[in-house]
Length: 176
Image (cartoon, rainbow, N blue to C red; front, side):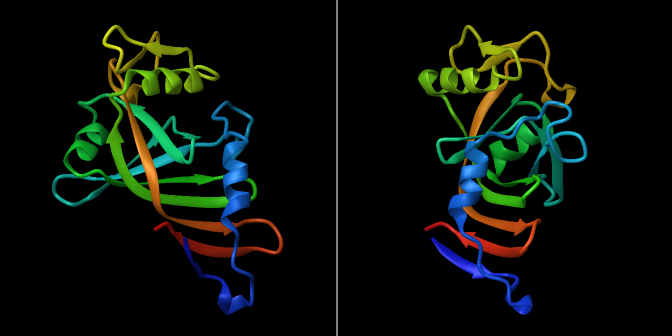
């Protein structure tokens, strides 16, 4: 991993990645009253066919060193990542603002889809559908489109973190 101190101008130290991962490993709830102005929201940025950015809130999870989200194949974000998997996910937490860059790849391994369904089911009562490679539930965000919802893994290629508490700092991490 390479780091670049973005706050050197202010004589602030380079941030360490391990505390950021520890914070993500502790979980980031999207339930009301848990963070942000009232809760945490992951924002997924994808690239439209004409090159314009598209940003949408998603129910993302940090698990096993990667970010995961789900969406319908016919949603705008689903079509965008099918055509061009490059994306970013961003989140404001109490201690950090974080942007993670990577590529979104649809997961088709039934065991992994089941594992992720169990992770989401902690806050959202989803389940694996009859195909074994997608999710379904009695409800989801309208922006997810109708089921089935496919699972996508984003392995971080780079990340930018801003420490929002004292002493502050900002670092760009590039993962080799």
